[in-house]
Length: 302
Ligand code: PRT
Ligand code: ZN
Image (cartoon, rainbow, N blue to C red; front, top):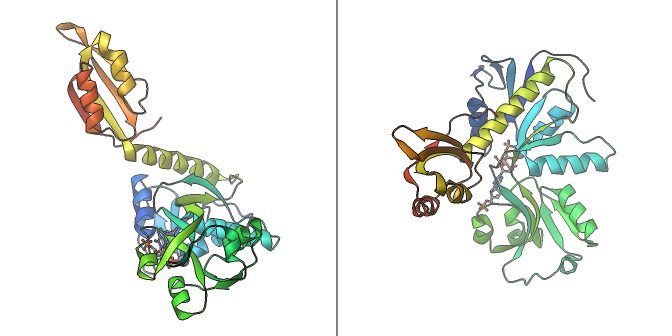
């Protein structure tokens, strides 16, 4: 059920504690949002803008969006995708859509098999028991591959199920792979590549929250762009500029400025979206650049 009540403050739900709590807080702080910490620490009033914070369990975020309690949420794609599939299976609307990938908290939802098993194709899983906290995503993959396996739902500690004999294999989140290795399991199939995302209702709210949502998303875009962006400054002869431009990684149109007293030379500055490596700098120097400077970018508003 969606609440139709109008509100003039935007509410964003993030994980209270856990793997995504700090990255979410950090992202909002970089967007210029400041919150008054409340004693119960579930609701934090926004002091710098009419945007308030709800601190909750990550699994509750899609539901809060669906109910209209939260206008946006920062959640793993794995959680959003699982709850979206589960809602569809129940004939309900999707709880929210992915508005922005955040390129952080990356992991994979994978099927992992015992180390001694040679995995070749989905048919091998026929009739086996698979432990998971993601029954909808796993069920969907099994159905798409025509495999009939028994899905054993476990809320946590999925990786020990094969050792306990309650399942033959597992379907769980993997990042470094250390947990699988420690449990004599190995990754066999990736079902979903996940990262933190901003989720929200597909429809933009018609009251003040609509504009606040767009403003916050624009700031988030800027913060994400800035993470990997660098300002490159250098001097070079006019004739070398084309070669140097081709070396600059993902550069916007550079600005060229005359240099007082050196009519043949120009100063170039360009924002590059992507890592600027030592190799890039050495290549530009070989192409005739001097006075090379790479600076971090703090804010971008395109
Ligand atoms: O209390 P609450 O319900 O809010 O938190 P939670 O315990 O359900 O979630 P949390 O904090 O563990 O994870 C939040 C989100 O972080 C997940 O939904 C993912 O989107 C993301 N994320 C990124 C991960 C991992 N990496 C991850 N490695 N979530 C869990 N893991 C676990 C995985 O389940 C396994 O047990 O880490 C283990 C594997 O890690 P490696 O490095 O050994 O492979
Ligand atoms: Zn959770």
